[in-house]
Length: 183
Ligand SMILES: [Zn+2]
Image (cartoon, rainbow, N blue to C red; front, side):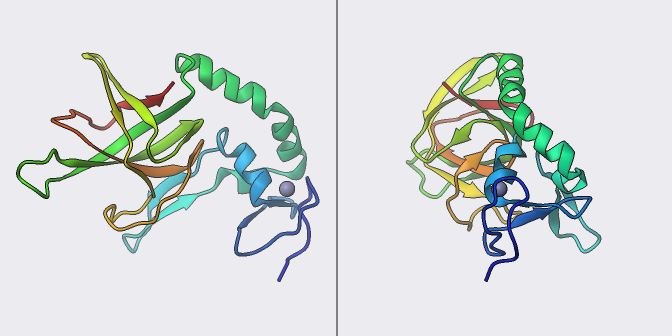
């Protein structure tokens, strides 16, 4: 069942895919929203019931602003690339949980945070960038962001969206504020 059409590309709006209602009543489909997400990241917060939710700054835009941003998004992403040293994709770590299942195997790390730009997929070769140097490893999974962390579905980690990067290795020192990058 569709709910009208995207004000920007004309695609049918499908509630299951999600769409944004703008300040002035304009509607943007999930494809157009994803294009802008890198410039307008979701802002996670905890509500009064202790649930993690996300505020969407895109819903505060008017249709004119949205259309203008769609034109500017390539330039905007290029600005982010320059700021973060031209990596293909950059993820900022907010919290890390470590899981040690078997004594002789390296622990598994669940780094939750935000994709600043670019995208991350399972099996991507990435580097953890810290003052002390770079550590390379492969991702074993990219999961949907969730406060429970350990039991969520695999997603594409896309610019401006929160997600969880999963990886394992011997004593990977990874903490809040660290960047994980893909080249
Ligand atoms: Zn659209």
